[in-house]
Image (cartoon, rainbow over all chains, first blue to last red; front, side, top):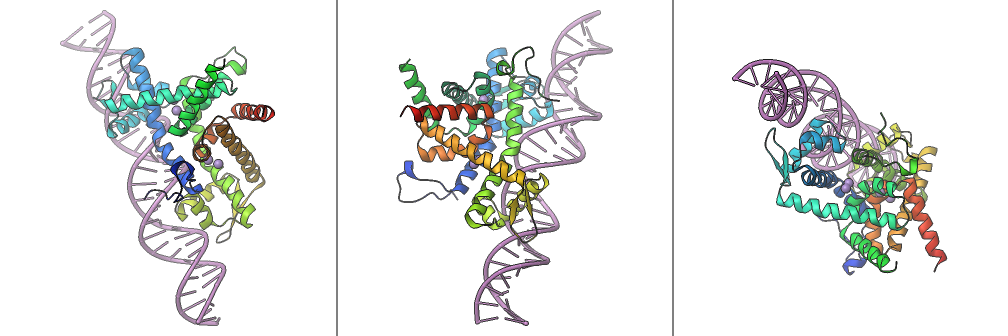
Length: 152
Length: 152
DNA sequence: CAATAAGTATAGCGAAGGCTATAAATCGGC
DNA sequence: GCCGATTTATAGCCTTCGCTATACTTATTG
Ligand SMILES: [Mn+2]
Ligand SMILES: [Mn+2]
Ligand SMILES: [Mn+2]
Ligand SMILES: [Mn+2]
């Protein structure tokens, strides 16, 4: 059952209960790891033409079997393919997700810097923040950045 | 072993490796749940004078045994106390954490609204974002908000 | 004050996401 | 083409955080 939001209000004004907000944060968390892997695998393919398990593990900062298991989940969810002892590839869905995630990542970093966060800190915090930035928030970030560019 | 940052640079300019950033995001995640419970238990005590397991579970949007288990972890980590069939209480450490987390939560919501995110969306996204906002980012948020108040 | 209702704890399960140790496959150099 | 080095897979373990079902304790009410 979907979380019940306040009825009789236009969607923009519906306020979610505190439980709904926590539930949403948990759901986001469940896909955050997939997002990071997919974005990063896309980077590796762009840079090296391929994504090897060892490189994936190193970039994620995890042990190699941990990466192997995550890749198994990516395959299970239709985001990647791989054959034993060969590299990892993104499906069309995986590549599309990677592009969206990468764009959102960049917008989050840019917005943090725009409001005065030091660049290194922005890059550090963005890695976690990005996954919780909804479409609506992302749109607001981009509008803000566009406005700021106009005014400079 | 701590993540190795680039040496020979002043701290503000040290840029973490991608693996370091992912590792940090995972570490944040490990404490996010504790932060949410502690903040929310503080709210319940302030509102009702006590925090019962059933109310905690309801506000978190989880089953009652799930809340009981989380409370066990809070106790293990020295953030809360409780006696069987009695309410849950925060230790001094727990109460201090709750206050910090609550203040950060409010600043995150305020910043999102300040850059144009609709209020309901801001409240929804903040529940996840807040945990990844470091001290440095929080300071920048508060400076930005103070500046904006001055200019209005 | 006994019976019922409500609240809490416990048992037991599963999925995720970590890890180390080790087996198996592939790759490169000779 | 073989052999050692590298890479990948597999096995087995742990912790956290969900869940349901059920037992037990406390509170309420007739
Ligand atoms: Mn990320
Ligand atoms: Mn990212
Ligand atoms: Mn939160
Ligand atoms: Mn919060």
